[in-house]
Image (tube, rainbow, N blue to C red; front, side, top):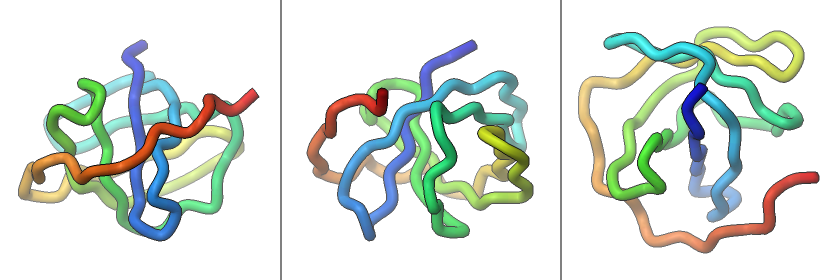
Length: 85
C-alpha cells in the first residue's frame, strides 16, 4: 500500500487514503471513510510535490477506482487538515 492524498478545489483541503494498487492508467484507492468526491480531483503519492488529475470510474464502500487523466499538474497551494479519525 502507498499513501495517497486527494485534493479538490471545492474543499481546498487534502484527504488521505491508500492506494491498494496502481497501474499506468489508474488506481484502486481505499479511504478511511468515503467522502462526497467530485467526479474529478487531484491525486498525489508524494505529498503533493506533484499531482495527477484523475476521474472516478467506480466506488464501492470505502473503495474507489480512478482513471488517470493525460496531464500531470503542478500541485496547488493548499492547507493540510487533521487526519480523519
